[in-house]
Amino acid sequence: MKAREFAELAGVTVRTLHHYDRLGLLRPRRNGSGYRVYAERDLERLEQIVALKFLGLPLGEIRGLLDGDAGSLSDALRMQREVLEDRRRLLDRAIGAIAEAERNPQPALLRRIIEVIGMQENTNWTEKYYSPEARAKIAERGKDWTPEKQEESSRAWLELFRDVEAAIGAGEDPAGSRAQALAARWRKLVEGFTGGDAEISAGLRKLYADQAAWPAEAQEQMKPFRNPKVWAFMNQAMGCGK
Image 1 (cartoon, rainbow, N blue to C red):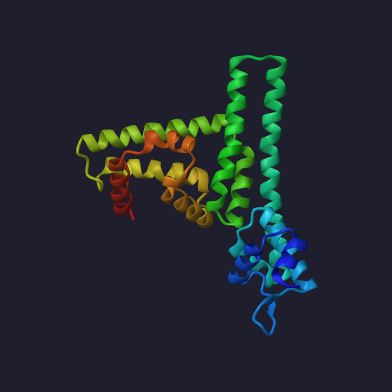
Image 2 (cartoon, helix red, strand yellow):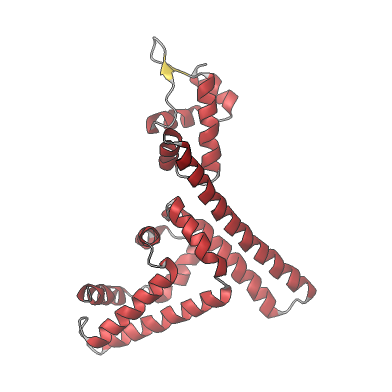
């Protein structure tokens, strides 16, 4: 089959087929005129690509999984399953919070609905910055993460930023004892999320390097932490502590 006929059969666009060909994901043979020609084995491969893409795997990783051994694909599917199970737990929390509010519609319960659904939304948009392995680890660590713990973490970060701004205002030396104590608190809060894991830390760096692309709500939440003097001071303090 030529590209257009194959695309209609598979339910994708010709442009998608060309894109997958350029990425090396789906390479059909060429006929004497140089046109792409697809066979039944290409349809099976395309179905695998579409399924893995639907599960949230990046195209760059899909090629390696399909061309690698079955164990790698199995591990990736397991990790995606764990991520989806964690998302289901968050949805179950939201459903439970709504059901509780239906029985007793108090303002505190309505706020909890917003908090729980907000946790779900936050999980979704940040996933692209992390590898499947890191997402699975985050999902595992997030099993015990509650709105109360989130509130405690947010409060700790706000207090730390205020203390850093005070240290800057007092002309503290980044290498001094006060600054180093602030750096220790900073590391501890970061490790509260990453657990010291290198893959999670790498994703977190990508996330913060791309702040301009964050959703509007996330950017609004970040406003109290935008002071560039704080970030510059802490970078110096952390460097001095190495």
